Length: 378
Image 1 (cartoon, rainbow, N blue to C red):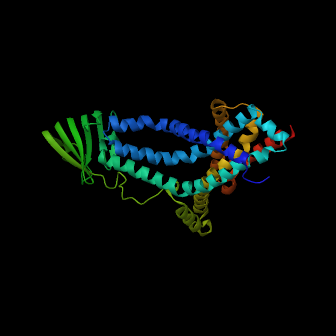
Image 2 (image 1 turned 135 degrees about the vertical axis):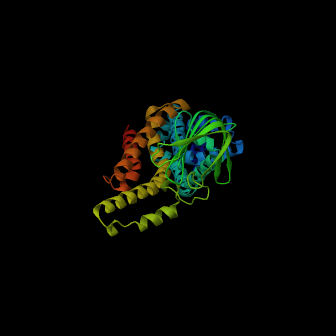
């Protein structure tokens, strides 16, 4: 039988709608976890909608790494479940068309998707993670009040700030207590009823109203002076403390393929000075290997999910999105548990990092193959 046939095109066409719908629904569900924090940025912290929109786009890049392979699973469950329910699969079997042949078109499409998602996971997603962190750092720099928690001390550089309450929209503070370090090692305590925070360049300017300054005047701290004020200004440098947007540091999940591979090649535990350093280098290298291979493995998950979805849907003989979402949730939970556990073992040096990265796909593919063989014999 030639490829693609009319049947192949029919099966692929049936996949399009549930695949796109799956991406939309899953991405929305995953974004729900962030909606409260995003709404808080707009309502309480007065962050522009355009900036929040950028945050959503950067978050979506990470979410798509998970939602795309899951949507492949959902689409295959919907299509083959409906085909089995309408006896189309049985009709194909009676014509000598095997279950594996029916899955050929989705597998070919999943392979093309694997190529795209590999590039996406290795290049686009880490860049989005990096820009997300930089944008959050920029928001913190422009809205330093968001770093201060009411009812507890907050450390900003060498300063400790306590406020009873705050208004994030207006940057107003109430019931302020500030511990300001001096050059001689003495700490000056400033108390104020009211204040405001503004940012100018790389400096936080705290304008304090109606308060007192308590400052020790002797090295033994036995003597001190008290100065009352109606208005007092404290300047706090933040260039080093609040992750400047000019920062070039990238965590492993923010590094692109070239950067990860370069660091993996450069790490050589054999050059360590002692056992402790050698173990640390091996652990670090394992983490980077897992990070690199996990991105490719997750992109490959779409192919594996087709392999397991076809026999499961055929056995279940039920179509519809409800059944597909329910089964896909169970399958992906199983997949995710193996992924997290194997990663943890690899990072602790208890499993080869390459095997750990691909173990979820290996286990899922084996289960899919066993179910396919059983269904073919049925």
